[in-house]
Amino acid sequence: QVPVLESGGGLVQPGGSLKLSCAASGSIFSISTMGWYLQAPGKERELVAIIGTGGSTNYADSVKGRFTISRDNAKNTVYLQMNSLKPEDTAVYYCNAKPTYTNSDFLGYWGQGTQVTVSS
Image (cartoon, rainbow, N blue to C red; front, top):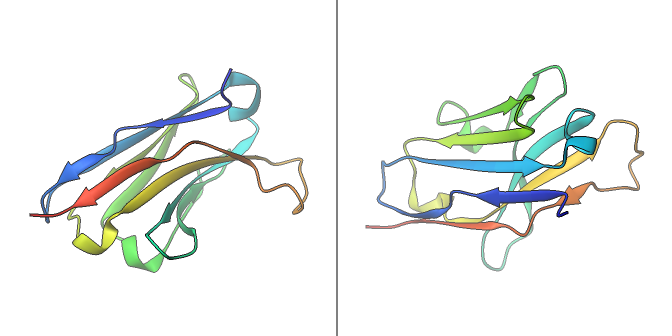
């Protein structure tokens, strides 16, 4: 079983919305901080948003007020609602699950990524 699997990417016009989903295996979801990261062409992977096991959240400044991360513990799924999308949001979006008991040497489980393209 793939530990982490994203879905929901696609092509959207500027100003539009998309909702990404990430399903994680039950054995890790409930004990993991879940995060969304993006990687644009030629750039490093960077944090978009994270949500802790208790629901606390943190966002990159570039997405505050536009994106919302949430988790459904009954479905072992984390979501990223993206509104007011801009062309500069175009990237591959990756889901990450990092069990809270792991140290900093372990970067977490990564999904395969889903492409988000914002273009008219």
